[in-house]
Image 1: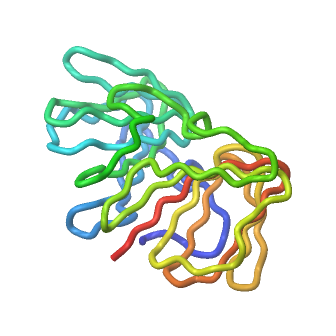
Image 2: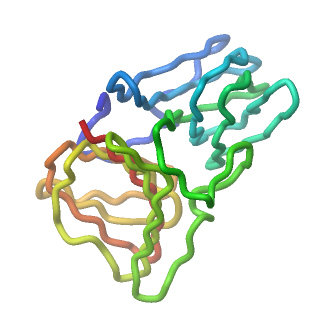
Image 3: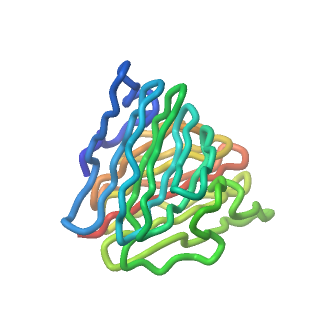
Length: 216
């Protein structure tokens, strides 16, 4: 995964728009699945194109429109959408936008997420007293995307992941332990674990996050 490891960062701050430009950064690709960051400057447009798979769009900053020849969906910071497949879909903004795009192919999708509906990842699952709640959003044999809620005082014991992992902090604050160091993370920030990197997660109050794991 083409991303810094072992420190808190922000997709939005690390990928600021450049006037008049659309910019993409490849974070991961295995020839089938991919993760990209996009930054769109004011009044820019990625023309509608046809793909035979769906894309998960996660807006890190700004606002944008996802559009087809029939529909327009307005997204703001922290909004998401699963794009429809096999029809022309484009992205545009009249201000600015920074977002993550994840290819969703060969995947088992949770029916809580439907193409063409704007939603927030943090709203997909509740908190439960004294518990950690998991929801698989999508998975295949090479990638898994999960949303988790942590009640105050809960956490994951130290372990290592079988692949690279990218965290999206969605709500509240948490503490990431990674290879002997602790890092505070809050909504809107990100963190990467390298494959086999030892880590743990603790809630600092109540905390929600999304976890995108790539398995090569």
